[in-house]
Image 1 (cartoon, rainbow, N blue to C red):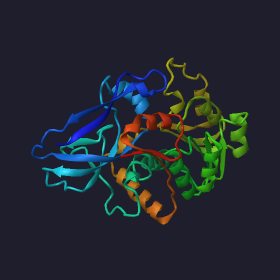
Image 2 (image 1 turned 60 degrees about the horizontal axis):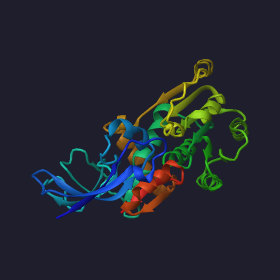
Image 3 (image 1 turned 90 degrees about the horizontal axis):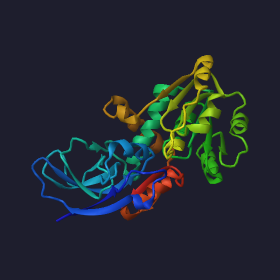
Length: 332
């Protein structure tokens, strides 16, 4: 008999999530039916998207949403062998049953030298987000200036390194001096701690007096207000998040001045959701290329590991506070 543990959302979050908003439950797993497989999670992902999506996609008492790398431990489906690994989106749970339709195999010939948790990070959804946003929207040219905020996070670290591969000057904004040092270590040309600068406008100007050709947006709010004003004509902006606003309890009015900036600078600003691309060829293309770059040493990765499924809510809350450098992972 297998007992599955799951974290549920007790109530919808008001402001920042708190430990008491989660509850750990247990249930016995039923016997497998023909065509089903039983999987055991080894790594879980905690991501910013879970904060806004939980409000619309979950009911109070539901298992928290999220992805994991899991191993098949029992199978009644010949397409899925015991011991094989898959990425699933079965939420914050230790064991689950699947008919296989929602399971995504790890890229073929996964190197033994790399942790499988990278399928949730640099070679998974965050890395693919960076790849697609750069290729489909920013399309940077050699010599251009590329700005990324939340630059020490799971997506931002990969964005900056891909932009360097493309021949850009890369500027990153982060929330600590330690993260500034990390960005310099992985090849960013300029980086600053937005929490300690006296002026965002001045910090952006100092990092690139000539302005910015490309901007990968994760934060929104005041940072976006400052950055948009320093875009060059025909600049491109990929919007994949707005984490500074996820915990707002009172909606703020939309800024009235963004349209003139977009119009007179002739900017391209496009939001995109990575889930839209999951069944498209570019997703596997991105994974293959990212894996190659990592093995070649062109892209470096960093994982912020929280050990123990029981600590998953704390890992999620810490990630939203920016405690992680690189991908936030929960390890069984």
